[in-house]
Image 1 (cartoon, rainbow, N blue to C red):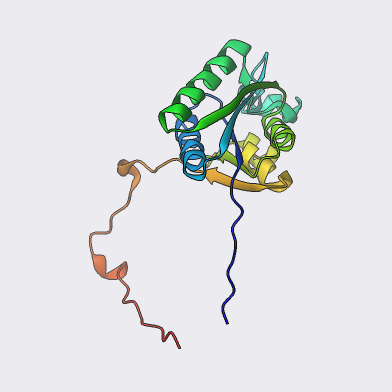
Image 2: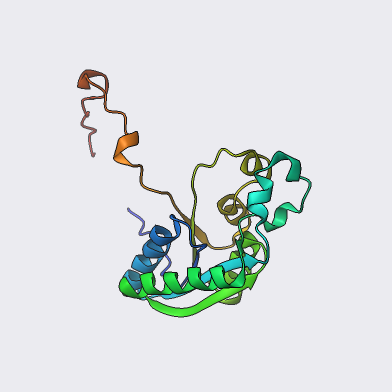
Length: 183
């Protein structure tokens, strides 16, 4: 006897944007899911008047408050990031329920808005950053995954073709699939 696993429908999806190169693909993925699931999309950008991430990448600045890392500095830059996100979302057929600026730390902002809007999913971008700040303090994606009460989708950047390593001899990378009996 087989069991049917029911997946929760997504009704509200929250996505973070900061205007970076990864923001476009992150919002696009969230918008695609929202359109496919007939869900509402909430776009969020955390901002502050100064950029602590730039300071945190300087070892001497690690004594500063780490909770503000990852914010867009300046309200105008945050507004532009959210407006760009709305355009991307609409181009992908998503219904944008809200586009919000939050003066605060990015992970907390996403979680706060997800709670307020009863989100079923949070979508956040993540790159592999090997900076000392991210190794010591963590990333926004890590923070959200640890603290979220709903599902979280991490969007990773596509690897540029120039970074792909293709072996000259395929014999080491080829394996023969083995049939498994279905009885």
